[in-house]
Length: 258
Image (tube, rainbow, N blue to C red; front, side, top):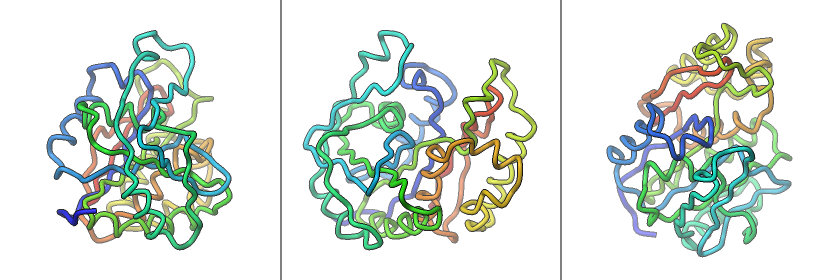
């Protein structure tokens, strides 16, 4: 892989799959990020929507577009994002990660946690994209450590993208625009901790009482944040985008580190 400009790290609050085909404040922000960031060699995405036993990496030459949702319009279900894979990036990930064995996967593809965002950032779909799975056998500390191991990829021109939602509780979703007090409170605390480089507080969310328990109703949307923080480090500048809690219990906050 050609050495390029050191890349930042992103965490994207991806929200509804409908953001893939809608023109709204979230999709426009992702478009702007795609234009503003240095052009990467490839993208490594850690999505909330690929959970495994063991750690997998998509290793096919042409990942399929996975429509991992139900009840949405035909336009969304027909949306394709035919970005190529990257055998070079797969090998680089396998060489870089030492804490666990990374296994090549030929079955998954790109789920909506990846393509619903990347179709706005890189709409031409020529940017190589590889996904790394969420290994549910790992502890919170181990997820963060794995993210730390990935940081070296930034010097190879790889854009690391964690895609989930900092606050995500579908059981508590409402059609009202405003967020619940507990959701807004925990989202704000996360911003403060990330800004201060207090990553331990983000990792050990279970220590923060009911607001955190409600906000992280299930961990899969939260874990990609730990990868982004680990890969981003504590000393790089931090920028926040779309700082908003919607539908009561979904934080659309995005973070750029570096």
